[in-house]
Amino acid sequence: MTSSFIHNEDAVNIEIGYILSLIVLMIFTGSITTVFYQYADSSSQQSMRTGSADLGSEIARDITNMYLTTENSPNNINLSVTRDIPLTLGGRGYKIELNNNSATGRAAINIDDGSLFSYPTSTTLNSINSNDINRSIVYSGSGKINIIMSKINNEMELCIK
Image (cartoon, rainbow, N blue to C red; front, side, top):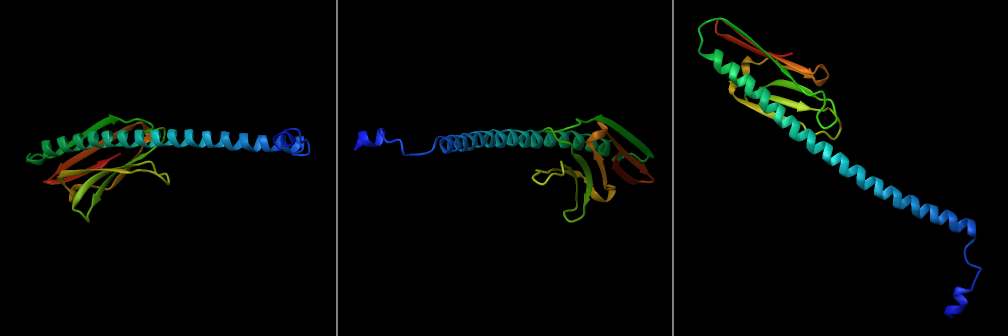
């Protein structure tokens, strides 16, 4: 039985054998490529989350310092801080939004790359009255963010440009 199977030449046509081998090779190559792409995309998303959390904390620190500096002063004050920001986080452009979130009563800095599978990060500004915030957006393509705080007649205004 075994010898008849080994010496049987009526099995698969040579052309069909090549086609089947090519299909198996394509499936194998496609699966390796898919696994590598998913790993690389996961690394990019993790880098984006880490970078945006750090950037949000730096901006929140600047805003809090400005707010605490001007809060108890009776004088009219205009402060402006310019900070360099990275053009990309995790290989993608992004936007920074200073948001007056009236639902929670807290102002927040939201960073998002705007893609379908993005992981937006939000840094809450706990020490700041959300009524003082003007909702504003800065895109990463500029490479800079300008934080502006003005206090005139005990009325504060904060925005980013």
